[in-house]
Length: 312
Image (cartoon, rainbow, N blue to C red; front, side):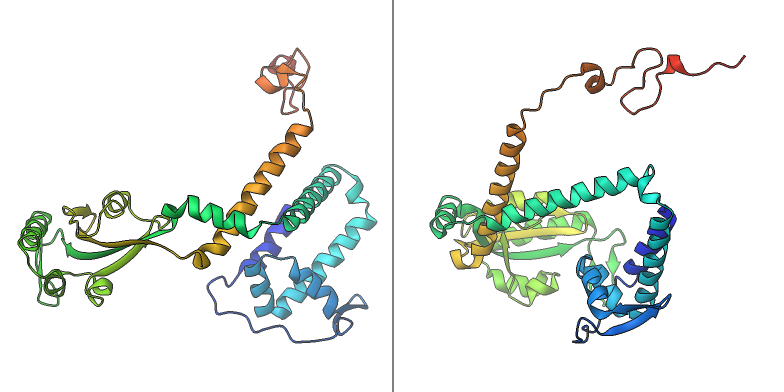
């Protein structure tokens, strides 16, 4: 069972880096697309199965349709044989099927409840007003001075700084800026970050961005006009200057807020439902993981050491 599951999952996972699959044709559900064992396989049946797969697996199935249908027919054939052999009524398959069904029904109920949640617009607006700093965008200007373990001239003829030289260069630029030098001019003459250099050193970040901790600590704390000390990163030093701070408009983060408030409602509902079960733990031995009495199974269902048979 495990081997076939792995084979089938491997098939639908192939091609993760390929181009998007062509769209499925618009066929009537009762259109026969293949036959196996004298049985007809319809477009509607195969489409229902594809629809429950994760998005990437759906793409892979549509990209390799012939192979997918062959795998699907094989799965159907072997599951039918398993039904005839009553494997679904024997351990461990019976318990696995029941557990899977229970998990699926649980998820279906969660989805039903969550889809019924409503978030009043005024609640979303209130959340935005109370947490506006979370949605702030910080506009910066930066200069990047890289360093290399192999100092000297690079392939482009430009001098490559050692770490010590790059730090000294960054310190020198900061002195020039504090003395009134044009920041944009220094960006064009010295910065080696091509993306921001093309925008006169402009960079916009938000508090939710995944920034290196050293940069986050400095950049997000800068006030407009404030200049940072050189911030070391593995391959260079950054100089930041704060330009402006402004929160994203509510319209831009509305969907994010509604999703977050729904998630909070779901968490509260799950916690409340769990509490309503009035679960009482009855067996300290099970929950402590202590060995059971002689001959009794431990928490994992295995006999305790004292019950193991001894060789004569």
